[in-house]
Every structure is written in C-alpha cells, then in structure tokens.
Length: 312
Ligand SMILES: Nc1ncnc2c1ncn2[C@@H]1O[C@H](COP(=O)(O)OP(=O)(O)OP(=O)(O)O)[C@@H](O)[C@H]1O
Ligand SMILES: [Mg+2]
Image (tube, rainbow, N blue to C red; front, side, top):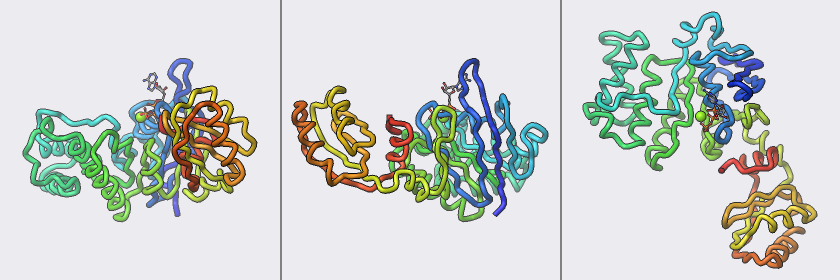
C-alpha cells in the first residue's frame, strides 16, 4: 500500500520548548492512524503543521504527493481538518455553518447543496439543520464540526481529539462515523488521549510524549512492548507517596502508578508478588479491598515507557 501522508524529521520550537521534536511517520492509504498522547504531547502542533496552519521549524510534510512547503494550496484540498476547538459560528444555523465551510473549500451551487445535505445526514442532524449552533449540545456541535471537515470529500481526514468532553451517545456516533468514512476509503489521522478509542479505531498507533514518538505499531505490536507482563490492579484506601515508594522496591515490580483508590502494578511475575504486595500495603497502613490481574493495554505500554499514567 502507498503512503498518503509522510512526515519526516518534523520539529516545532516555541522559544526554548520543542513542542514537536523530530517526529517522523507515514500513513498508508486507507489506514486509520492514531496519535495517542497526554496533554501537551504535541498532537495539535503536529496536526497544525500538517494542515499548513503553522510552519515547521524543520522537517518535511507530504500529503497525497503535495509538499507542504511548496504546494500548501493543493495539499489543503486533499485534506479535511476537524480541529480540537469547535470552529462554528454560534449565531448561525448548522446548515449555514456548513454552507460557509463548503464555500471556503470552493464548493458552489448544487455541489454545495448536496455536500451540506450529505454532511448533515452523516452527523445524524438533518432534522435540526435550521437550529442555531448556540442551541446545540456539546456532542451535537462536535458532530457538525466533523461534518464541516468532510464537505469537500478529502482523501485524508485529520481529527484532533474529536470526542473530548461529550456524552457517550455522541461519542459512539463519532466513533462509528470514523469507521464508516474509513470503510468508504478515507484515510484518517486520529489523535486522542483516550487509549480505548485508538485501540478500537486505529490500524496503527504512534504513542507521543514530550514532542516525540516513543513507540509505534499495531495494537499487538505495542502490546509486545510489555510482552509477558501483567497488570495487577489493587483497590486500596489510605495510600501515601511513601507507600508507593515501598511498593516499587518489591522484587518483580516493574512499574507502579497510583490514583486515590487504585494502584496499577506492572509485573512479569504477578503470581509471586501478590502476597508481598498486599502485606506491604497493609503494613504501611493502607486498606486493600480487592486485587485483580489483567492483560496489558496501551495504558500499560505508556506506563512502562514513561513511568507515568496516560490518564492524568
Ligand atoms: N503557540 C504556542 N506558543 C507556545 N507554546 C505552545 C504553543 N502551542 C503549543 N505550545 C506548547 O507546545 C506543547 C504541545 O502542545 P500541543 O497543543 O501540541 O499538545 P497536545 O498534545 O495537543 O495537548 P492536548 O491533549 O492538551 O490538546 C505544550 O507544552 C504547549 O504548551
Ligand atoms: Mg491538542
């Protein structure tokens, strides 16, 4: 399969900060490619450079054969962008917003009418097309935001955390929309800090942290990074930072991450550490209510590679 997006040696500096620090990847035609990373990882900065909104400090970008530095106009025609911040006019109706964005992409007359009507169907909001965006729920706005990105039927769709802060119903609608667009042939770059979403949607995933890609592959390839390990999840009350440090010294414990009431312990020997784990916690005055062992997921991969949790 041919590469439709190629990014090589991409760097973006804001003063001292390298927000994107030597990032390279390629996306094959027809793939859903995931960019997974916590707040500040550099996802939006990467998307902004690919969509020619900001210039890279260094590196090259090609989309559908068009180089971002030499042919930004042609590149943008191949690209649809769903920005992290909803880009709609609150006092205009959904249909008016879509007409505006469609005309920005050069659509006119019956082609524009058709594109707007199809986009409203895709958003599942054709019956509310004449309502002002300010009356829409957050999830509905996000669905129209996505519709606005695909009006001109781009070959490649960039989606920047399209499901943040919305209800489960709209989230499911959006995930199924991505699946449907991809099944119809669209290549998608999907950024998120929700590992469940990239696990569900993406053919390949790059894990990003501090401006760098720290791992890349299919879900199974990434799981191999923590191959042979288990995650021991301990429900516990009364854990102090000192307790975590004690747990880290237990032989067989690779990584430990804790929230208020759950400890996640990455280990190659879940069977043999369980007893010491519980007795250490109890001796530190913590109260264990349950212990379970699960298969590693992308959260475990991130924990293993960075020593921190993706969730916070
Ligand atoms: N215009 C800017 N000027 C200065 N610093 C910036 C600018 N834009 C982004 N940054 C910094 O670059 C880093 C990466 O930001 P970016 O928005 O790309 O992260 P992100 O992965 O999209 O995070 P989030 O999940 O919170 O959206 C952050 O430290 C951010 O503060
Ligand atoms: Mg962002």
